[in-house]
Image 1 (cartoon, rainbow, N blue to C red):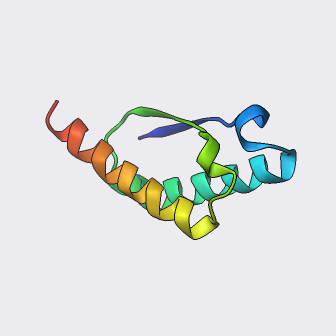
Image 2: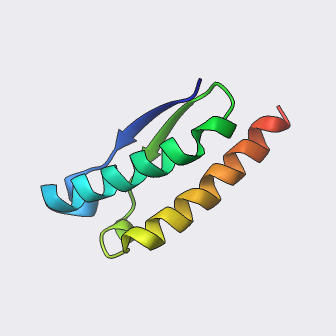
Length: 76
């Protein structure tokens, strides 16, 4: 079973409202995709672009990251 860790700093994302919005989007995306994940621990860090990104943009980018992660773990 995969586990999720979040590292969303106020320095890169801004105030608590933005941090919590981004955390909610990440958790939702993780829950939707977690069934195909290998048993790994995943830590998501924030970048400056996340502040201005919409929820849909964040979800699309996260889905790409999840797919890449599954491919990389399959070869190990």
